Amino acid sequence: MIQKIESQIKNGLFMKISRIIEQVQRVIAMGQILFDDLISNAPETQTIKYTGSKLKLLPYILNLSKKISCDSKNAAVFDGFSGSTRVSQAYAKSGYKVYANDIAPYTKVFNTAFLL
Image (cartoon, rainbow, N blue to C red; front, side, top):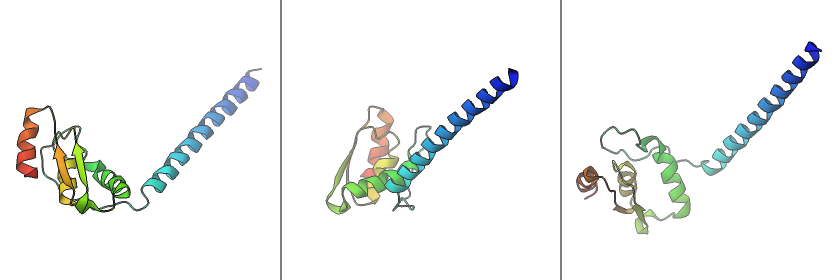
């Protein structure tokens, strides 16, 4: 009886692990479809170290924007939660016209220093 229960547990765990692996493989495949032409060299940006910084996401953000609007010279973006301005700076350096805003007072200083 114990061996039968152990076998059922092992089979159940194996099935769950197999489903998780299939889901992970689908997510990886989706990422490869979305980011097959990833801009690996995002423009260099300056700011303070910040826990919520999008620095590591910049290549993905710019890549998705490029897919929507291939002509960055005539495109504008609105960064409604600009924070440390990393994303706004990357857009500006990539040729986009940038409108940046944030409720935090320090953001106005960064917007003025890095975007004007």
